[in-house]
Image (cartoon, rainbow, N blue to C red; front, side):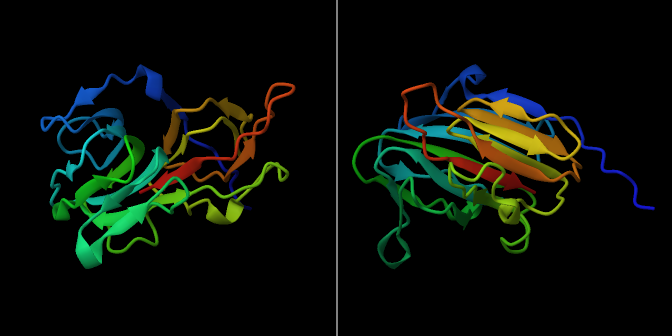
Length: 211
């Protein structure tokens, strides 16, 4: 007989509760939503950065990184043949934290989501950041994009949504929320929230994060 799935405790972190940390080079500021486990020996870091000026990223040797644009006209990461233009419509971009790519703003400041994993996984298939794909007309969505059972997993919402986990009550996540759990084998799905009367439905903007 198969044992029932017992979801682990879900932790919620609001971006509004995370104080900004100015960059030493003056090019922006970062709000750290999570460092797991706490301390210098972390394995997962999730943050949102406001970039206001061109400049290189800091180097993080031994760390695999993912980057997604949340707001603004986008950025160009890297230089010459290795340059990647990223906008709010782009898939998250994975890169080696040791590379410290140059970052140029396309047109004005951006707000961006960052995921760091350590030790760096061998490849991007089983860990990282994946955009949640859905349409407002399809309530529970995108089971195919939900990652397989990792040790750490989460979702970051840039627009409000409802998170469904098997054997749990649905939970509404406001915009700017990180929801995460450890050793959670339940199925995760999302549903777009209904807007107030007379207001249009916002396009879904959220990202699965997994170790």
